[in-house]
Image (cartoon, rainbow, N blue to C red; front, top):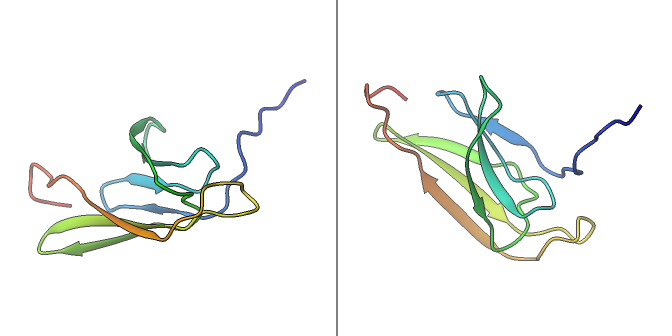
Length: 97
């Protein structure tokens, strides 16, 4: 029997009020949004450095934002960086986050 373990992770995930999981903890240097209900990757973006950090989510004036520090990690062999990047999430059609 063969077991697929995936890729090592170093960092956590966050979940938004709308059921999106954001994670960037793996060695592929991608930041991903995953639908919590289906497990489907809805969005991903290449990062300028390794995303071995737990994202942050905050709300201001009715809009949700997700923020990630991309610092890289020597053990994970991802590019080193010093960026803090924020993304604005789309506004919900019904005005509810």
